[in-house]
Image (cartoon, rainbow, N blue to C red; front, side, top):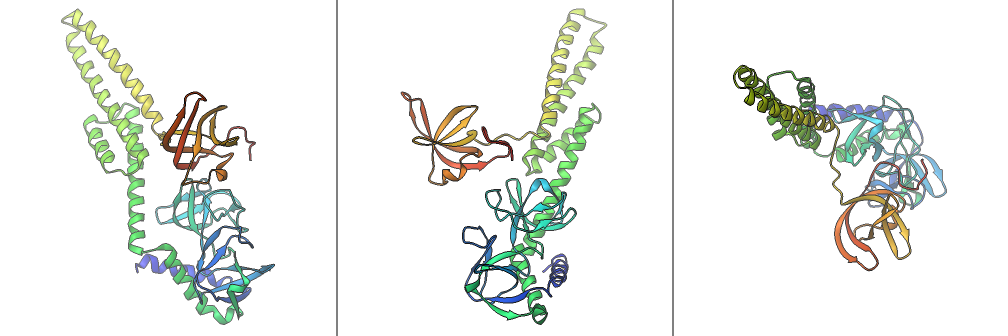
Length: 371
């Protein structure tokens, strides 16, 4: 295990001790017991607990036990409310941020609220959501028949710390793999910073063109980030046009005293080159934040007589069918869809799409009130 990972686990263990005096320790009496976000089976599963692992129960509701899990469990926070670091952490940037069991707002949030400045360990991303390890104070629910009471936490302090370290390692995965991801993230951030600095220089008409072309080519070829690569390619086009314009300006200076007819032609060529340059500059500006939508269509799913439809601006784009998705779960949501066009009924003006990919998109769904 790496020095970084070991230090991190020691820090985690010390954090667990902060609540080691509260509640009652229970042991799990079943195999792969579900840990849920609420006191009923309708709530999403946050993870599974192995037999003989320990939890600290701090409350009850009906036949459900409210507990803190040594080492925490995986949950989600919206990416707009945290700032990602290069060390595998994320810092909360708002007050009383909600934690959720899934990467959506379809279910009630956990009762734990995150405070501004609090740091979380990042496990990955799902769309706009960041998957993190819950803080030590976070609670989840276990059915009472699947756990057995042991005693007060102070008697099981060492065992709780061992459970916390073991669970963190299981959640984080292999240390070398995680460190490789951190290095890749740092390299990705460095390339993004470099291309933004080059863009500022190029858009101001400064710098050596040959050097800029070399650096942009290297960034475009090595980047695995679509936004960085797209902006680098846009800047490459801009630099090439700037180079052409400069060559034409030099040629115009030489010819201006010789042939008036040729001077006029060069002036016309220069004007076109400048226009192309300006158009490319505007496109490059736009490429700073632009991403192409990888969907066949974008709209809101509605339930109508005869099935489900995708609607945009009051017009039905497709009649939807899917074996991979339960369309009823997406009614009223703004989504992007891909799929195979199966049947087009010319007489009734219907196009049927067999959905193979569907993602909930940000933004307001048509006809739905603000939340």
